Image 1 (tube, one colour):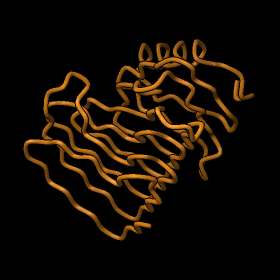
Image 2 (cartoon, one colour):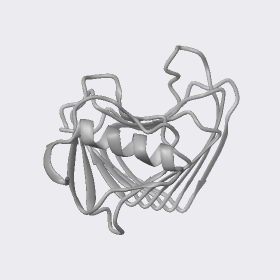
Image 3 (cartoon, helix red, strand yellow):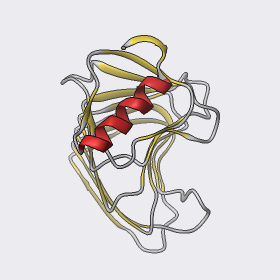
Length: 178
């Protein structure tokens, strides 16, 4: 694994195994191409410090590369091809923590989707993403989203945030927007 070839089926199998064992999934340093949506099934997943574990998003337009993320996503580089249309990760959980990640070249990097979602994003960088953070619901309904974004950098191509919630708490601390 991690050689840049299509590893969608292997990664889905790894998430299935992590779910069965009730453990987080670790991505060793390397490049992992995903060409259709992988269901994380609520499993947390991590990479190596410094985002040396790189997920290459090759999914069709408008679908997340990794769906139903676990409580924690940490130390990963998640990249599209820069051509637009590729979405990064989507979470349905009550609370998602995204820490030390790097997103680039995506249509939407992080999607908080659910009835009540609280997303904490810290020490994360977004580069060249059409939208860095969105709460676009997969079924067209509205979410009640609370976002906490701190110590992050957003160099965005279009919108830093695309929020369509009925009621949202929004907290920003120590961020750079360019």
